Length: 323
Ligand SMILES: Cc1cc2nc3c(=O)[nH]c(=O)nc-3n(C[C@H](O)[C@H](O)[C@H](O)COP(=O)(O)OP(=O)(O)OC[C@H]3O[C@@H](n4cnc5c(N)ncnc54)[C@H](O)[C@@H]3O)c2cc1C
Image (cartoon, rainbow, N blue to C red; front, side, top):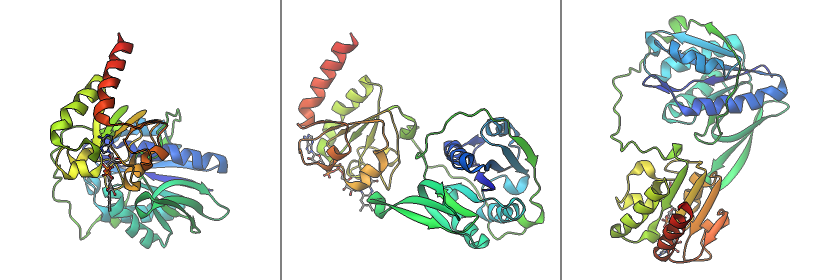
């Protein structure tokens, strides 16, 4: 194996968590095969990001300039094609994010490389890579064989746990040159969707509520419970569709993937689209009055009963233990 290039994703001056997840995965992939990890940073005035990347990669390739002030898939794609031709990596890792989805497929076409999106695991094969990805909204995991090198692998966010490292990668200042000028795509502005500021992907304890909550008037019960145990509230899709909680807290294949230390599922049946987003939690506790609910197949602990009866008992017990 030669090297693994990891495209640094950043926004508004901050490196996004998925970058460190990818760098961790890349180190694990490269180390046994004697390969190196190279973080690729495209940006304008992003020098402050370098130390954080140097500790995580063997080399940081930094292309600075106005062409990279904002994300533009065209400039990124052209620069990456040039960089790949020079460095000849075995694989290019890109986040399976909104940015990555814009960039990955056209990059693979331009490189005549194999592409796997939404990757959740990958290993080096004799020739190319073996890559696992979710299919049918997470109902099954399919193993793909990518024969090309480089392979373009789009990595699912919040799937790999970022780990600290103490490398001291050299910084290579790199010029993309003319290839990034004259593109057809222009960045106009970044329009942020108003948010509540709750980031369920960062929470340690998450209480997920489902249709079993029945009515909006029952929300205070779970809200108080979550507050008492220091959890953030998340939801299955029907709860979001009903407008009881915002879309940004939806867990699942069309919502967010989370990996908290503890996930408490209240009145959630465990449809595969939901499980796809929370099965990576360290501990899962499910409360459901139906003993056959599929959520129990992924739960470490289960309580078969009415959540309206269970929550008050849990609150009392937790208070007793806390005192
Ligand atoms: C393309 C697509 C994408 C989707 N994406 C997502 C997604 O990202 N996230 C997601 O969650 N869903 C998603 N869905 C929807 C998914 O298929 C399910 O419909 C949904 O997850 C069900 O939500 P639920 O478990 O809250 O509701 P239900 O399936 O209706 O389950 C409610 C559960 O509550 C239990 N219950 C009822 N009353 C009580 C009570 N008093 N006490 C205890 N338990 C009780 C019931 O036994 C039942 O198991 C998607 C669907 C499609 C087609």
